[in-house]
Image (cartoon, rainbow, N blue to C red):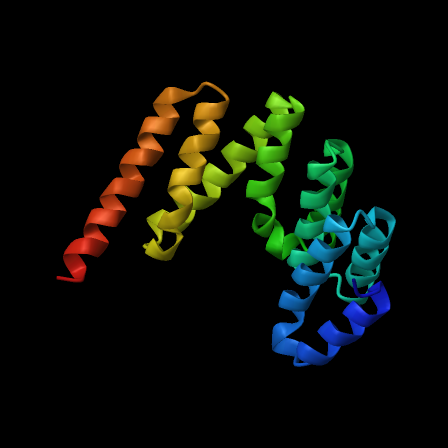
Length: 171
C-alpha cells in the first residue's frame, strides 16, 4: 500500500491542472476516509476551505464526511459557514442542509429551508428560467419528508410539466 505522501504527490501531479482540482480533492478525501485517516481528512478540507473559501465543494465534502460519522451539527455548521461567507451562493448548499436538518430531526429548520428554496424556485420559475426545473423533484421529496403532501404534489406536478415541455421541444 502506498503511503499518504506518495498518494498526495501522485494525485497532485496527475490533477495539476486547476480545472481538475475538484476531482483531486474528491479522490484524496475518499482515500483518507477509506483508510480511516479521519483527522487527516478534516485537516486537509480545513486547509482547502481556508485556501479557497468560495469553493462550495470543499464545504460539501466536509459536511458529507461529518454526516457519515453522524456528526450532523458539525456538518450543518460548516454549511452555514459557507452561506455566511458566500451569501450570493447560499443555494449551492441548501439542499444538503435541508437533508441534514431532516436527518438530525430539526424539522422547523428544515421547513424554513424548504420554504426559502420554494420561494427562490417560484421566483426563478416566474421569470421563465426553466433550467431550474431539475430542483423541483428534490423539493417535492423534502416536502414529503416533513409530511406536507399537498406541497409535494404541487412540485411533482411542476417537475412533470417542465419535463413534458422539454420532451416536446426536442421532437
